[in-house]
Image (cartoon, rainbow, N blue to C red; front, side, top):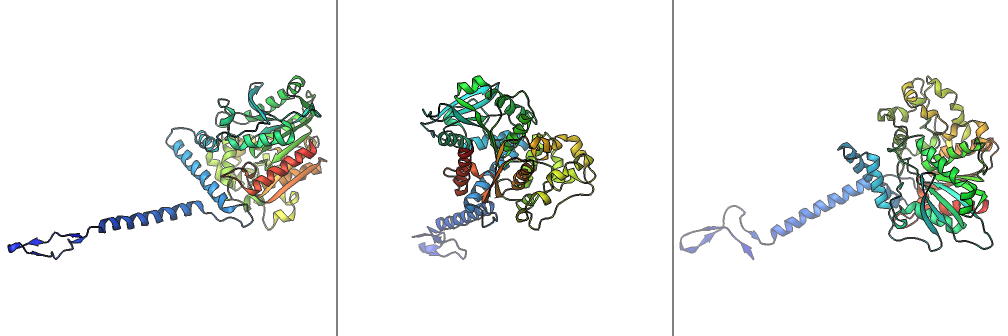
Length: 448
């Protein structure tokens, strides 16, 4: 059936118009369908272009990592837009998105008791493993979460079922498998506070926990306590460990420290791992440098100069004495240095270190601590991942600790990427996430 708008002549006859005025009734629908298909194809192509990034063949679950990275990049871009519009600080917006995305529904363990409280004014979440009659006193891990000193949950106004699931599941698994008490410190975050307030929070909470009466309350063995953390949390754990070795007032000492892909220095952003993984998910070099600048409440104008090591150039006298402590040409084995060359500028920007002296503070960069401090540290576990800008920070720290006489286990994963250990459940479950978590807990079980 068709409709026709021909011309009517005398006698009721119609003649066709010389213009295409007559067409089948279904033609507009088919046209709209073709347009929709073209639009859908274009959208799929754009989505694929946004999601796809070239990844090394050895990385774990590459397509899943691409999707995770695309989600995180999208959250960052939305938070940057919110910041640009003056609605909120970009880190507050990003943290809100991440915590909302990472909330679990009703996941828990009947074997583990979870309590929110505070230790000397610092918010903590305590996970208590099941009691064992043959072991009246439990071992314990004080855990510090990562997130660039700015992300992940730090709110007490939540119920246990609303906690961001990644660290909740990790700490619950640790408590259950180790029959331990896990103290997760909810330190204050950037931009509400800046360096060194995060360190003050973890030191204050841990000192409170180490009091004899508090350990007795939680039935913890004072000789079996470990400090641990991942990424920025690993940075804070390392800083806490170094500070505790110099604190004569502490009666109870830490037995172990366990650092998961820790960030340990901000003087050289061109180590082999920074050069190799400059754009690797989920922590590209540019993003890591911005986290440092945010941590110090610095100027974003410094970021590009810091990326090429202008802040520690040869004419910056303040940095000269510290370069040897992170000389990766001597601290890294050839299997990691490969053919990469050091990036050492002759002239740079001395103003950066002058305005951000925190860059050269061992509390922010534990890798540059004195040898006399390192030799007092307890037995150490360091987990590193091949596809991570921070890989060499951990490996260099392991080498410096070994040189100082500390017993170190370096656990390296060839298919690992930054942050992988917390991604163990659907839909962000990675095989390397499960293997790193199991290896970490196994080491704790054997040594704590």
